[in-house]
Length: 471
Ligand code: NAD
Image (cartoon, rainbow, N blue to C red; front, side, top):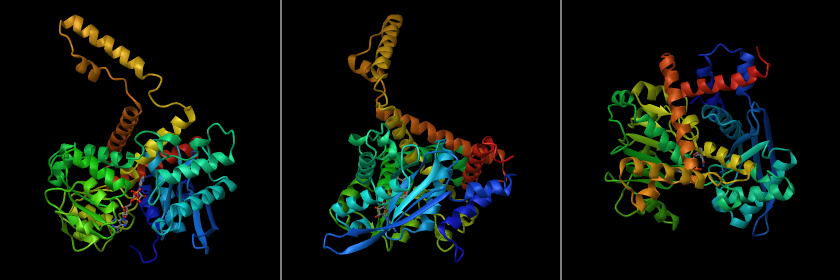
């Protein structure tokens, strides 16, 4: 990494590397690259012990080429403006790659949530929402937050409740935020969507025989050795779906250290062990690794960084032995590490595509909120009845008869989770093949990340050009 290069500068470098393959005027590229609105604010929190603390918050709307803007809210002690800007920019590119009609945004609060009580976190979250309302930085047609590092359904419920209370009678108020609990307008499947999306991405990548041969791998996930860094929302679910598809989780890294077991770890057992406050290092039957960083350098087929940015630098990239890096986190690979991976023949499946499952299902949640009806509610029984008719016709034509169990399995109208997962699967598979085709059509595009940025630039540029702003 260049000494003074921020995360936003890194994203800009990736953008510029891809923009070289276009002929757009520099003014248009500059408009796509820049952050359209940045809101920074401070507010006081009275802590449980009576002291007052100043809380620092941000919301960045990177691109207004489509509205609303969309992106998660991060609670972490080292959140800063350039980080939020970078994450907002990644959201713009991510949304366009998976054809989700939003501009990118991101929010952040500079706190370590572990140091605050639930009641303090609630007050922080509600006040943060107030601040966003004050400046028109939130709303179902304006800017729609979602969970990110350090936040989850609980925080989203507080945001939805605060926003709704401030907008009495606004019919679509609940669509002001996604990633909500089911009972508060959430959608089935959102919780695990980013991990499931990562799974669809890697399953699709591993299905192309020629790509796998080039890596010295066979097709399919069965038996592939996986290392996961970060057992939070993204890492846990990515590990779970990969394991369920036959992959072996050979190592898991968390803040306090990392463990390995060549026979395989079960992510939920490790999660339950840590939940009680125990260190990952005392998980029974596993061998501790010398450090969290050591897990990133382990011999494996698939490495899933799912914690934070800047994990792969020019320093450790030469020691990474994984054949595929599946970026669950945003920005885990610095632009100085990427050429090293290219040169070593490591396949990097970039964040702006790989972790787009979360925003894709957030889009479905928002659609559900705007339509005020659960997916499948109107058509489920109707489809089931049609399928039963079809089975009856098959029975009549063939003289066979299905058992009631077979009938129930074959004639099942889709429920909300079926539809959400199928929409996510379709999105992830199409987008992967879109990136792969771009590389095939442009052999000079060196890797999937550049192909992903190039795809995003074309899509955002087209929106601006259709507005007639640029020639
Ligand atoms: P999370 O807070 O649920 O989990 C993060 C986990 O990483 C925690 O368990 C934490 O202890 C662990 N961790 C922190 N530092 C670590 C380190 N140095 N080594 C190993 N583990 C470490 O957060 P999340 O929602 O899973 O997000 C993780 C990453 O995925 C972030 O980069 C986020 O921007 C990105 N992301 C999240 C979503 C989403 O839907 N939540 C969507 C897209 C991208």
